[in-house]
Length: 316
Image (cartoon, rainbow, N blue to C red; front, side, top):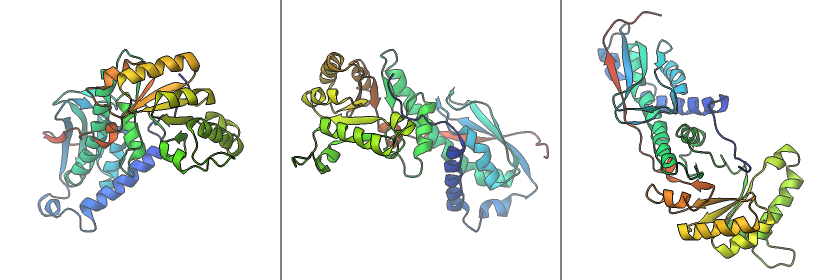
């Protein structure tokens, strides 16, 4: 395995993103007036217990943030997870128990279920892609096609599903696409747009000059190509990764063969036309990486619900 993008884990930065989204979600639901239904019908002193339950099979993600989300609504709410992020659950399986003031629990219900359902849906879809390419050696990567404000959390959910994170943002790596080539200044001879090989060499020089030391050493330089001819031309420029855009499996197999003969150190990434019906054939071509925008922009939320439980709740 060559250079790797930073892989996202649940850390202080991710917790901060989560709490910012929780703040917005609370304002959306409660604003300044609160929950009129609960205020009208539920005694402030009433205590209760409820289970977070998966209505359909899936993979859980977002559980580490649930306790903090509940506390933002009502500090008296307690969260007891029954599973861990990345764990597969069956329909009807309990993922966690919430207990404490009934009023707070009712106000927090939809907020918590929305957050968990969204991230768990991404983890679930990712797991399907990962299982589809099992045994091929190809790895499934996400993209920057994410919900604004949710990127790190959505990429974390991809990791929970067994996928890999591509670059988190423009700040993390060099990824040269056709629009960069068209908009570039070209070479000193004034020939206009860069060729892919020229762009890779120019980007390498820039990184060495402006990001020296460990940052520059870690910086991945990736370039997109549309044809096998472009691939052959760019391999001697030593990119870390070549992105093969919208190539069919037969072209991908040819690309792998040419890469193996010219510069086997370079990893190949397939992108475009990837879905659950095509991903296995793409993986069997021999590429190391497959990027799938659908992991984050098209994943349906996992259906999770809240079931009230009988029994007393001990006061804290």
